[in-house]
Structures are given as C-alpha cells and as structure tokens.
Image (cartoon, rainbow, N blue to C red):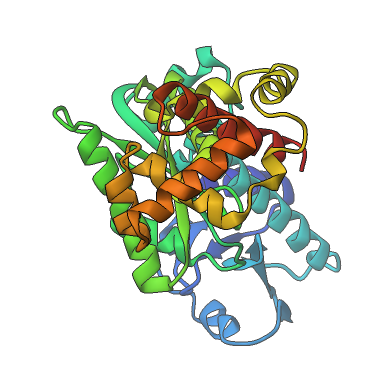
Length: 359
C-alpha cells in the first residue's frame, strides 16, 4: 500500500473533523497520522489492542478500531477524541480508509491490472496508459498458461506456481477460481516452444509430487504486446477445451498443435452429424465393444502396423487380423487401408465431439 495515499486521506479528514488520528499496520507501527512526527513510531496502545479479541475499544480521550479488508486484519485506527459521537466518527474514518485502500489496489495493483487485461476488462487504448503508470512493459514476448486443477477451496496450487515463478516484475500468477490459475510468463529472447513446454511440465510434475493433485495446462499463442495477452488467454482456454475432447490422455495442450481437433471443433454440429451418418450406418458405431475400440486406438497409435500392435496388446498376430476382419464386417471399412483408416479416425473424433456437445 502506498502510505502517501493514506496520508493524503488522513490530512483531508483532519481538516473536517478537527481531531488528531492515525493508522497503524498489523505490528502497531504508525503508517499515517495527522501528527507527522508519529509516522514510523510504534503506538504502544494499538500494539496492546492488536493482541486482544476486541474489534473496537474506548478509552479516555482515545478510541481504537481494527480495520479488516476482505476478511483480513490490515490496520488499526486510533482517534484522539472525547466527542459523544466519536464511535461514529471512527466508523466513518475507517470506511474512508478502507475505500482508499480498495481504490489503490484497483488502480495500481499489477496483478489486478493483468487480470483485467486477461479478461478484456480494459479498453485496448487504456492498456498502454495503465501499463506506464504501473511500470509494466507494454511490448514484450509473453505466453499464457491456463492451469486447471482438481476442485479445491485451498490456494495451494496458486502458492506452488508462485514459488516456481517468483519474479513479480516479469511474471504474473492470477487466481481465477478454485480450479483455474493463470500464469502470464515473460519469455526470454531465445526461448522457443520447447522451453515453453518444459515449464508446463515442471508445473504439472511439481503439483503432482508436492500436492498429489492432477492438473492440465492449456498453452496460448505468443503475445508480442500486452494487447495480445487476452487473445493468448482465450487460445489457452480453447486448447484445454479441445484437448479434453480429443486428447483427454494429454495433460499439456498447446493451441499451436491442435491438429484435426481444431477443424472439427470449429465445424457446425449439423455438418458433423451429416458426416458421421455418411461414414457409419445408424447404430453401427454403438455395436463396437470397448475391447474392439481399444484395439482400433492402439492400431492407429502404431501407424497401422499389425506386428507392433499385436506385440503391444500381447496377442497373436492372427488374433489381431481376426479382429480387424470383424471390424470390417461391422463397419464396411478395412482399417489396414489408409483411406478407410482416415475416415474411421476422423469419424471417431467427430463422435467424441458430438457426445461432448450434447452433455
């Protein structure tokens, strides 16, 4: 908190009420006062008051009131007064100081500024002006990581990420809710996509090893300036959405490497249903059991290699050939042929997309 802001408010109120007063921090040290000589000194009575459970106390010629902001004890107000309405005076002063603190945080806090940039709450023309006020570099390479964890009321994931990237002048960690945390990371001149992925892997591994929680990360596109950070954040959101649908086994998804999933995600559902009905007759896809589907997936993972697939599935080569023949009878497609395999692969992805949309 800029103590100059408090001191300005204190001086103006003093001119109105005519009484001396001041505020201390959580240790009892005076941070603003109508008597400037007190600033920096320990106010003994406030120090004693801080150790009590009381929120307000009256003494001869003195009242003290604790000021809580967002449920946290931040300051103590002391007012030198015998006025019969001194309690109300103290309440009004506390409200003024609290509003001054909240206004300062809103206007000057860097993390809050970056959060507003992310969410598009600042007009593009105002971003550069506010960045200069806060001494935030406007033109700099940045990348947005959207970290999604299991639902929790604790801030442990946020704290872990903050400990991994403690440079508050360059990197910003923003808590959106109990599942989503954003890291806006400034990139070095020669930092490439491989380094970007390494940092994502460090976050995933640290959260898993220290907190035993699963996490997934969406990586946005590179932002050349602050104005592009919101776009990078939206791209990270899109990466996570598409990754959850088409590559649920992956816990790091890069917007720049979404492949066919990006195309399908952008298609109207009506076109997707038309394509699916063209590839599969009604009810055919539902007749494929889980074991057969696992065989198909493994076959695709091994680039249609029968020998390697049978080895990984721990089955005889002829058993795999029998299963592929069975699939051909059910669907009319021979997955050993490239064209049929492509049709089937895309149809699987379209089916997964439609299932997700219909939820």
